[in-house]
Amino acid sequence: MNDRTSESIVILTGAGISKESGLSTFRDADGLWARVRIEDVATPEAFARDPEAVLGFYNARRAKLAGGGIAPNAAHEALARLEADWPGPVLVVTQNIDDLHERAGSRNLIHMHGELLKIRCLACHEIIAWRDDITTATACPHCAETGGLRPHVVWFGEMPLQMEAIAAALDACGLFISIGTSGNVYPAAGFVQQVRGRAHTLELNLEPSEGATLFAESDYGPATGIVPRAVERILSEGW
Image (cartoon, rainbow, N blue to C red):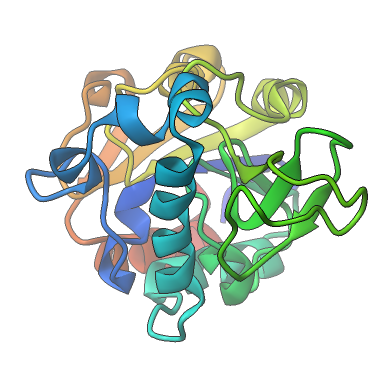
């Protein structure tokens, strides 16, 4: 192995890493946005206009995730192994709102787009672990207000979470890996440009993303095949 074992690794993951676990991606031909309009379920304006419809959309997604049929796959497990076995820091920054990274064993993790199994109260601002349905009649467990509970997810038009921590990690990393993301949603799509020329960059995806030419190295195929292979190589040879 080359002498990079103290260098940090930042991994960006998108919906493609969870697809083989049975969760729909957003931009595939049969993805979520092909079946429902973004403007109807994933904006603050939609929630203000028809909160029950928005809550219903996320209730259905939460029930599917929490229902027991969805589990981490080999790609999630490989990243948890990388974190456990790499001598330096490993941070997973995920655009996904599922909990599959946690269930696979990842601990150093940032959900930049929020978490489906949490809700947030607009009245008292508490963030609450939650696995059941919510409606406009559901009372906040902390302040007892009704009508103010929403999914703890980042909607279009809202700022992603923990951007300062992500920027600091990108500035310090020696390797940046992008997995299962389309490369057309900012600010995440700009991460490779932030590190390019200073850190090594690797894209792992089903097919080339919109920013594929910005990466120094790439491998394409199902995540459950290419991610474990990349992790094995990094742990044995570095980059």
